[in-house]
Length: 615
Ligand code: GTP
Ligand code: MN
Ligand code: MN
Image (cartoon, rainbow, N blue to C red; front, side, top):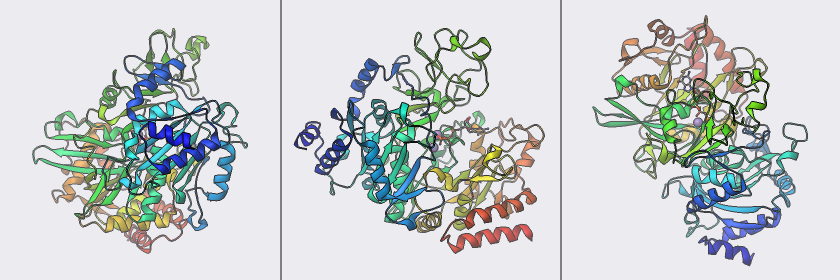
């Protein structure tokens, strides 16, 4: 213990509660060495990783890593929220008893870091001096160097964030142990992995992975699960899987701030990195504030502020190219110190490739390794360039990790401690019919109701009845940490207490033509057109058409300068199919009926909409 206090203090970390925490867990996991990390250690750690082969060079200032082939995504089945109160079990939070879960994790972690270094990573999930800073401090203990490199990119890492605290013990204790990945029984009935947030102890215990949200504990485990629990328990704030952008109207010299949730892989990062359509570029500019997490609180001036607690972006590589997302391509260019995970790699040329990076595969397969590290040239000829599932060069969930400072459209004030005042909150999923391009909602309860009934269409028959959504309230289903009824009440309370109410909207970029299946809306940069209309409604410049589920744009109210989409498709995108909606209302009733203590107002909103459809 004396020794550990000295290691910490030599590294400039002066916090007795952290020393006690590190000593306790070092006693359990038994690492060979303990090392304290700050962001300035990045270059040295990269050199060490290149030396040991944990990462590989991928051109000037770019790095590549591969995770174990059975460890390439978040595991929802193996993720639990644990507390001491059984009444905190919800439908989605996978609640477990805290005492049992902790005992199990202690057992799994016992001696599991032998032969390895325990890195002590003090971090902050907020800009420094943020009003919510006390909820943002954490210390991750991890036995994996690549995880440390990810943390340095995704969170503000440094001893300074944990020194001189009013309450030295107020930080999230986040313990990550990789485990023996080849012997964990991933996906079998003897699966030893467990990813637990012990929410009422502000302790995160993740065992059995080195990948993404399973291992970088600042991001999802702390930033979303723990933070949404803290925000509820303290009554102070909301934490949501949201993107956050600024839309600047250069003519009026006014910037509007829009945040919102789309389920995973439904376009948050793409929206946040959006360029205005060419024809609108003279007047409007889109600024990136965040692409995956927003904390919302009411400021002293009574406005709702949205703040991105992250320091980087962990984006999907697939289909990212200079046409679909030039902003992302620019952010991950040479010199950016971006880390790529599970894409295809050519060690001879140090090149990287993923499906959709270029229209075709690299010309010469010589030297190329797929995401598992297997030579493409060793495959039978007909599988070297095959688009069949399982033959991908890059894993479909392969990602890039880069700091926000690299994102070319990052807002000049993205580190503003309290965030930015929110004008609009939007929800959107992937729905192939029924959901119009955009519907504006001006009533708080109906906005919250809309978030609670957000979903994406089941893509595989096994996941549900055809046409029925996989509901994903506020896009938080995988990160929900407390019961849904309380969640709805907390939303009504926090947003309801603001002096200026945001406008809500539901958007859908994914409606398809029932005949040939093409997307009715071109999406991407054109999405700005829908958001500009929403701001016009908010400012009283557009009135739209009232429907039971909100206000739809009149075609002439949309700014269509330079629009290349189909006019006939627009008619479909701007209308409501009442028959499909009536069916949907009955599914929604079943969905909401699962939630205990759902506020009466939410049911009243449901009834109101249902009656309007039946009138
Ligand atoms: P997570 O990071 O997993 O939470 O997902 P995300 O919400 O950030 O999703 P992302 O922006 O990475 O997009 C996922 C997929 O949706 C990509 O394949 C995009 O190409 C596609 N996509 C994004 N925006 C649009 C759009 O406006 N229209 C269409 N058709 N596809 C889109
Ligand atoms: Mn996400
Ligand atoms: Mn994203």
